[in-house]
Image 1 (cartoon, helix red, strand yellow):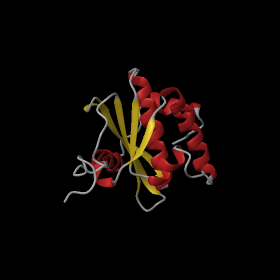
Image 2: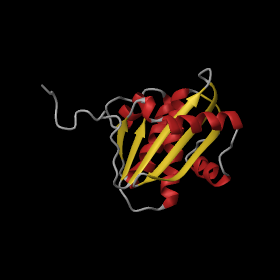
Image 3: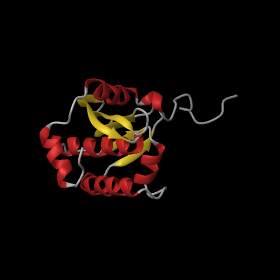
Image 4: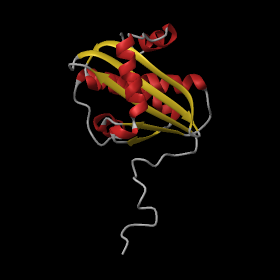
Length: 167
């Protein structure tokens, strides 16, 4: 006797949209706050078109998660691909706040939320929470950014400064 639908053997976290762009984001902070990094994987129809890992300096984990989203959105905007955008993250807080299910109470996170909202408005993404095991590439890149102290390129830094985000 089978329960569920015909495709119930597929883990819903593992299902990926094959249409348009998919952006996987992850932020990491060691010692929270501490040395932090972001990892971004951008795919177009399941093919990786960009992947980056950057060092942020000392941040909290939640700040790193938001900065991963913001930097990922800026990278998407640079690619100027006219496709639907689906964003995946393993931070339940980030995804629930970006979808309006949780309020943003922390003043620093409120600013980052506002920036992410402004940038994402023109891209009209959908947000999906995934478990950490399905976000390994972005996680690896975030930790690689910390380990190598790979700084953001100057054009991205300038864009962040325009939004009053200083690293």
